[in-house]
Length: 165
Picture 1: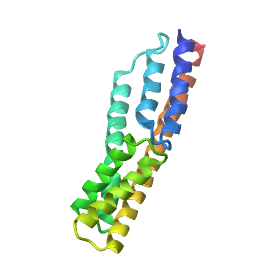
Picture 2: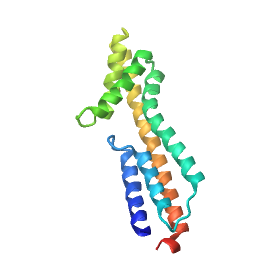
Picture 3: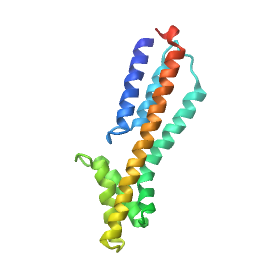
Picture 4: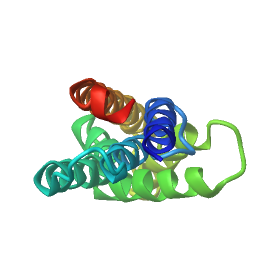
């Protein structure tokens, strides 16, 4: 049972790291599930503090993943309408069955939000670019955290290797 749960956890860690770049998969929550699988193994003692802190961190990063593109829009001169447009575009990009929808969605949403706010096309395009930069920043942040979770996973497996295997 230990080897099965550790293997599932390792698979979830790999999927979580890939999910930080693939917009369809929530990378950090999947990586956290990999940590959970490790601690569900009977030979590994349960550490509720570790799991609780990493769960809070995963939820925080997951939430920031939706907020940062809107913040990028504001940083590059976007208005509240552009921020709302970027957020709605991100949600539409997730739902839309088009390739790269999660990248294109915030960009188009911020652009439309700025045009509705009666901005000229140049400032609307600048705000949309800020949304794109925000998306890249949030993806990089998610990758770093998923990689950190994977390193924690490897460390814990190494720590309990004699009991697990």
